[in-house]
Length: 340
Ligand SMILES: *Cc1c(COP(=O)(O)O)cnc(C)c1O
Image 1 (tube, protein in one colour):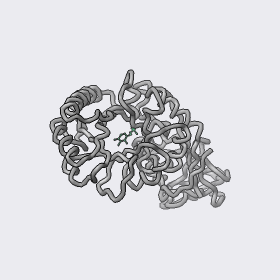
Image 2 (cartoon, protein in one colour; image 1 turned 135 degrees about the horizontal axis):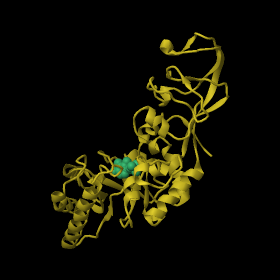
Image 3 (cartoon, rainbow, N blue to C red; image 1 turned 30 degrees about the horizontal axis):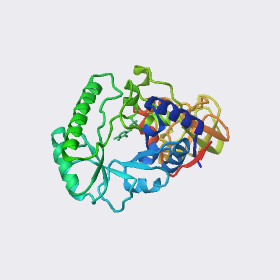
Image 4 (cartoon, rainbow, N blue to C red; image 1 turned 180 degrees about the vertical axis):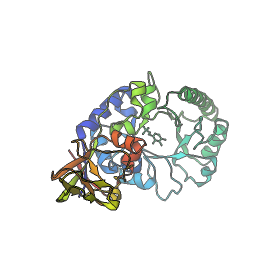
């Protein structure tokens, strides 16, 4: 079976760079949504705990339950039904209408829309949210926002940062008026953290950087990080492809001369998607993917028993004309993970 190797040293290296930038491990919340960007929720959660990280961010309560014992503090981004609850869960409030659905005494982080216009309440709705929540005895433990363009070379990042400063001031005033404790403030994803001089918020929500990627890193001279995941496949069979014979569905690759080819046990069903056939993909050792990728197999011009399909997804992201996030999250969660 294909398998994913997780490089613990690389993960710890990245977490160390991030913790230093954030000023301490306490200020880092690791984003583990979508099966830890395809790396394995429990595997990465366990390693992050071992490193000393106390906070995590997930998408749903079901994900939070799987890592409940690993972290003191879990922020849940997008849950609509509150079938169970734990004191270390903090649930994002994405719109005012959701206040009615929240259980009493729960911990809530209010998401504020500072310009992305995807989720969150507007700045003008803050007081209404605080009043509605405190009436239900809900603990407002955080107020946060998300940047729409932290990894783009535009002014949007600074404009949203400015808007979030207004949010912080407004929240402080409201809390003073209502005699409520000041909640935690957080706005930075990976790119935003590394674009911020003197980070001073309560914590940062880092996803892609812990896995070793910062898209557009070249533009901003971000620190070099180390990819954590590599995908490996095992050989199923070997044959000689004779000159003129073609391989795979529709025979899109034809041998120019006799060549040894082998089939490996990874395919688009595992999330290694069919390649854009106008572009070539070669493995880190330089083996070419020949013809079309099948559901459970692909063919390479080698007969090695085990082949590393990738150990850095930036090249594959280029071939697919997408971002590194999409490559790793598309991998089938059932692929076996091994920590090295
Ligand atoms: C996914 C996500 C993050 C992490 O973003 P990265 O760019 O991977 O660091 C942070 N905050 C929110 C709200 C997210 O949805």
